[in-house]
Structure formats: structure tokens, C-alpha cells
Amino acid sequence: MVRGGTVWTVTDGVKDNCDVLVSKGRIARVSPDIDAPEGADVLEARGRIVTPGLIDCHCHLGLWKEGYPLEEAGGNEKTDSLTPHLRALDGFDPEDTSFLDARRAGITTVQILPGSANVVGGVGTVLKTWGGYADEMVRLHPSGMKAAFGENPKNLHKDRGGMPTTRMAVAAMLRSALVDGLNYGRKLDKDPDFPRDLRLEGLLSVIRREVPLRIHAHRADDIMSAVRVAEEFDLDYSIEHCTEGHKVASVLGEKRVMAAFGPFMIFKSKLELKDCAASNVVSLHRAGAHVSLITDYPMIPVSCLMVQAAQIVREGLSKEEVFRFVTMNPAEHIGLADELGSIEEGKIGDLVMWDGDPFDGTRSPDVTIIDGEVVFRKDGR
Image (cartoon, rainbow, N blue to C red):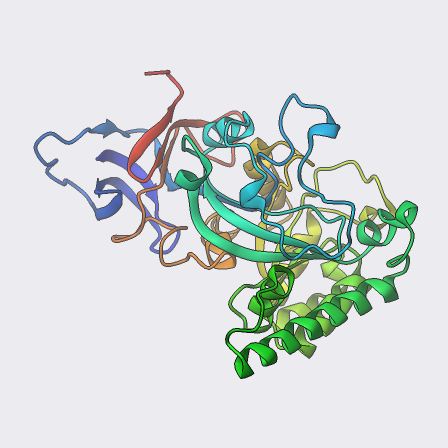
């Protein structure tokens, strides 16, 4: 039980001098003056802020590993530009020290995705940032099929020859792949014993809206191409990065598009990042788009999630609005809003005790709790 803290519930305001009781991994009560059950571990939170665990809904923890050369990176399979049968689950290293960095920063849940070298890159997985091996950490699989528009898929296969080398080709290859998935489904409907094809199986799951399409796009024209293709096939989709989303914010807001924005605290290493700025988030949010903040680790350290959030507050949004971008909104983005993202009875017991305001860069988590278990303590106990 966490006792006597200032609880940022996210969905029901701030509750002073409040207790949070966690039982069997879930939040059982949120109320002042709860009598601790016999044998319960009690964490004193007086003078501290208690929040739900943070969520980074787009990163590559364990695929690009801390302290290893780039040759050891496992996020992009560059031998083929269409790889829907790949799974981030099979390639990440749970012993990567970035998971510890995430826990230290109060991040309890992440979605890891393949990289953006390919037009279709494979499926992602939602993980808790604590566990001894991959299957113990998984909370949702598959969590989305990665696709990519723009410079990365257009340029990273040029030495190999063949498509794509233009933006037209990227869109055409994605549309063609989705048609292949659609036709595969029609064959299965006629003949359930039709030979299994892992590539087409993955695309069919997207066509049937069983798995959302997570579309990497920075430039405004790439964002609109992504929306155009996704809506042609009536897909469940999100825009990942959405760097120039502010230029088409009215369209994205009207459609209530899910945008995993960021990172913006980054070296602008290519032309499509030239207009990257914290203020873009404000435009997207005010237009009505559904915004989550991401680190895209290893592009920036995973510990910088709240650092970015503080920058957006400086642009004019309230702390309450922005804190949703790292809690409730990403929970909705990954389809786990009934389980994560706020402090409510019945939800999973992922909590963080902070030694001060989470938006103050000099403050940090004292304790991080996942599934009701303490997984990080600043004092080392």
C-alpha cells in the first residue's frame, strides 16, 4: 500500500493525503485513511507525488542496445523492404540496460517496434520494463504492424537495387502488399486448408483490423499519403512521429488521428526533421488529434520522456493536459486503456512515487512499482 501521497489520478483529478491499495497486482482502493491489510507492505508517500506508471508507446528498447556497436542493432532487416512476418518479440534483449533506465525514469510500459527501414517492417510488442525473460515481460502481442513512409524506406534500399527509390513507390508497395493480404483472406474464406503464409497472415491481420498499422511519417505530405492509404483499406492506424503534423493539424484533428509524436529534442539529421519542434504538439492537440509523447529510443534516451513533457508545458499547455500524453493517451494508443494510464480501482498496479513535481527536471522517482511489486528504489533498498 502507498500511504498519504498526493495522488495524480489522471482521470479523477488530484487527491491529497490519499492512499492507494494494491492487491494481487491490481489497484483495489484509492481513498484516504485505508486500513492496511495484515502483512501488507506500506510505502510512506507523505510529501511525495504518486502517479500512474509512465508509458512510452514507440521505442526500440532491447533492439538497439546500450553500449553495443550499431552492427549489433537488431531493429531493421535490410535485405527486403517488405517484412510483415518479423516480430520485435523475437529480436529484443531483455537484459538491455535501457530497461533499467526506463524503470528509474518511472516508465513501466513500452511498445517496442521494428525500425523504419522497410515499407512494412514487422509487428511490435507491448512490454513491461521489468522481467527476467521476454515472455514474462509481454503484455500485448502483436501490438501493431510497422510501416514507413518518407526518407528511410526510400533511401535505405538503394544499394540493393529495385523498389522503392521514390515516395510513389513506397505508397505503391504498401498498397500492393495490402491487396495481397486481402486476396489471401479471400482464399482462406473459400478454403480453410489453404497453405499458411506468414507474410500474408500478418497483412491479413491488418486488413481485418485485428492489428493496427503503425505508420512512420515525418513530412506533411507523407502523413497525408499514410492517411490516404490507410483509409482506402479502412484500417485501424496511427501516425508515428507526425513531425509536420501541425501543417495538416485540422485534418488530423477532424479525423481524431492517433499521433505518437516525437522525439523533438533531437539533432535534425535529415531534411524531413527540419521543422521538428515542441510547439507542433500544441497545434496537434488543440486541433483535436490524439497525441502521445514518445522517445523513439535510441534516438534520445528513454529517460527523457518527462523532459520532453516539461518542454511542452513551456509552450502553453497545462501540466494536466501534457501528463495525459505520457499516461492515459499512450494507454489508449496501444489499446490498453482499461488496464493502464491512470490510478483507478481495478487497473493494474503500476505506480510511481516522485520526490517532487515530475515536471521539475531536478526531481525523479523514489520508487517504481509494476504489477504491485517494487522494481526500483532510489535508496537501493
